[in-house]
Amino acid sequence: MGGKEIESGVEVKQGQARDVSYEEAIVLAGHGKFHFGLLLVCGGCITATICELLGVGYLLPAAQCDLEMTDADKGLLGSMAFIGMLFGSHLWGFLADTTGRRSVITLTLFVDVVLAVLAALVPSYWMFLVLRFLAGFFVTAPQAVGYAYLGEFHSPSTRAKAFVWAAVFPAIGLIYLPGVGWWVLPATWSLPLPWMAFHSWRLYVVLCAVPSLLTALGMILLPESPKYLLGQGRGDEALVVLQRVFSANTGRPREEYPVLSLAAQPNSSGRPAAGVNPKSPLAIMRSVWDQTAPLFTMEHLLSTFLALFIMFGIIAGANGLPTWLPELFNRMAMYETAHPGQSASVCGSIEGLIGNATASSGSPGDECLAVVETDVFVNNLYVGVAGVIAPVLSVFLVGPLGKRTLLILSLILTGACGLGLKFVGSSLGFLVLACIVCAVTEMCISLFSSVAVEMFPTHLRAMAVSLSLMFGRLGSIVGNLMFGSLLETSCPATFYALGGVLIACGLFSFILPRHGKFQN
Image 1 (cartoon, helix red, strand yellow):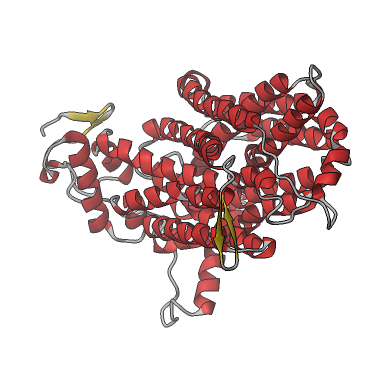
Image 2 (image 1 turned 90 degrees about the horizontal axis):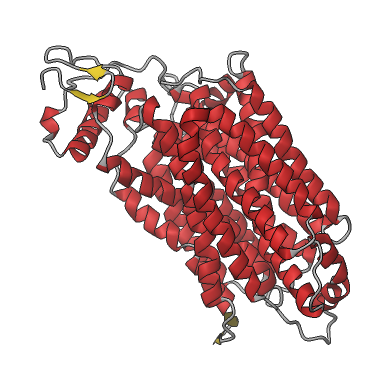
């Protein structure tokens, strides 16, 4: 090796490779093929989560007859996965910090696939609702833990761009959903089963879980986070993982990795006290408390508040609006079909169709018609394409602007566009603003996560991100219920609230530190 540099700024000579800090060791492992595969799998976690959460938006118009749904039922269905995520976020953050990132992600992805198959086969709305809750409970782990897992394989110099590139993967889900939906949902075939008729939308439920299956298979091929292993006092195992990363990136034998041992982490995650059964309920509750309480001490209280509030607003915009976009696009298209040559704002379209919407909910003798306009799929494909462009642009902007400044500008922009959704007077204008809101807020999740992980030490990082995402799910729940309950009674209020909370998040982002307290 001699004094050869593996990454700019770090040089390790023979005889100086013992008890190397993790920050130096991860730099010396290089950056290359391994990180490309890592990005694909961790990005797949995000895509799988998006497909599970937002795929239900296409079911709102398609399944309303089979599941006998009113608008209030649709709002509850759109929220149920987020309610499940709210209950699961804390648990999965704790398990990821105490049992490992990789095992938690892999298990929950496989369970999500099983739940999707079951959901496609249940006959009633309430059974479907319960399975949506369970799907949300399990699928919260891949996204929340996936960010921590991705970041811990990166040095500070590459971590920010890795998170920004990860923001491309929600867009893949946003393209996959309408693309598959356009192929499947308009079909009118019906497969009779002893307990129900299997229509095309049920096949769509299963197809929404395909990204979960592919990502779970990819996660099996990856190792556990070396930073987690080191924090657990398993330095030898962490070193083996870093040797594997080095070999994959450089094409050289693992034995040439220029680190012989790793310096112990100063803050290891706590274990149950001696004499206490680590699997007992008391020990588990104590461990959860020990893992969570430090986030609310004076040292971390401001960071915790900012992480929770800002993520609440970002995910309310990133998930609340997209869940309802197929329904909103469908109603605007139905209005324009019923009134040729005329266009109206989204609220004007909804008000113009209130009579038809009431009729479609049906009385006992009426035939229910589930109408899904082609514009729903076309417009949402544009939203997905915009979701690819936004993070790619941000990759080039994050360097000169910095993560904090880019986050502030992005949130204020999306807030203004969220307010504009109420005022724009055509479906084309609504589409343009919706593309900006959905694409940029999705990008902001990854961007803010890269800021958040540097605000907390390693042993609290996964829990902090999981808690922030838990509050984000609360924002999603509020957003979905708000759309379901207010669209026909107070439509403008939904968009005032959407734009207002995003602008507020942008203003609070001025308080964020320019550089994380635990950047390394």
